[in-house]
Image: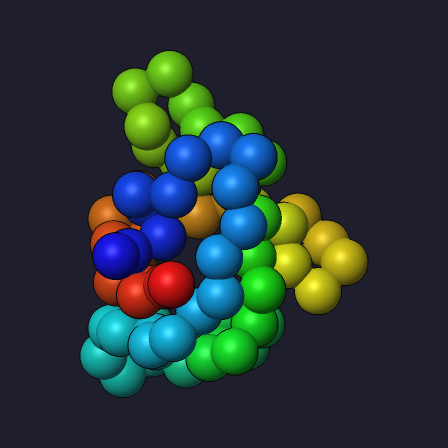
Length: 72
């Protein structure tokens, strides 16, 4: 399952961070690392972007990027 498939208000744990090169490094720099608990706070009407909460702060990411982050 990927991060974009989590319903609003639900929590999940990151298992794998995809992407390549600079994009993957950017995810890791933002705190999106394996074993991190995330909660989906809001989703735009068309599903893009997605606002998540992790490590005490909110982060908004594109649906395309959320599809590269695997969770359980």
